[in-house]
Image 1 (tube, rainbow, N blue to C red):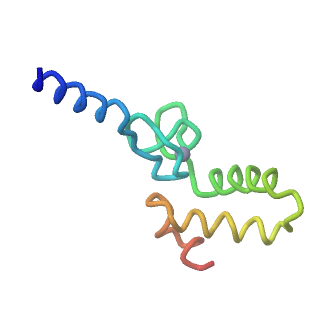
Image 2: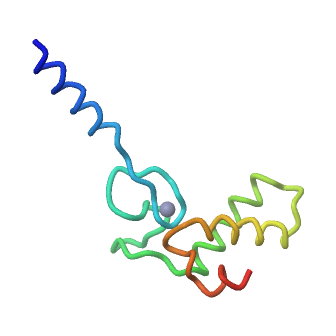
Length: 93
Ligand SMILES: [Zn+2]
C-alpha cells in the first residue's frame, strides 16, 4: 500500500537525521553539544579546556606539525564552530 511506503520513508529520514556538536562538529543524536564538549552537568566547557583538548587531538593526527601550526589549525577549525566563532581568541587569530 502506497501510504505504508510513505510512512516508512518518513520514519527512516527521522532516524538517520543527526545534528552536529556546535563546539567540535561531531555528529550527535540530539542537543547542541557532544559529551566531549560538556561537563557532567551538560554545560559547555571553557574555551581553554576545549582548545587544549582539540590541540591534543590535532597533535596526534599530525605529529610532524609544530605547536604553532597545531594551534593555528585548531583556531581555524574552531572558527567554523557556532560555539566558538565569536570568541576573542578565534577572532584575533
Ligand atoms: Zn563536541
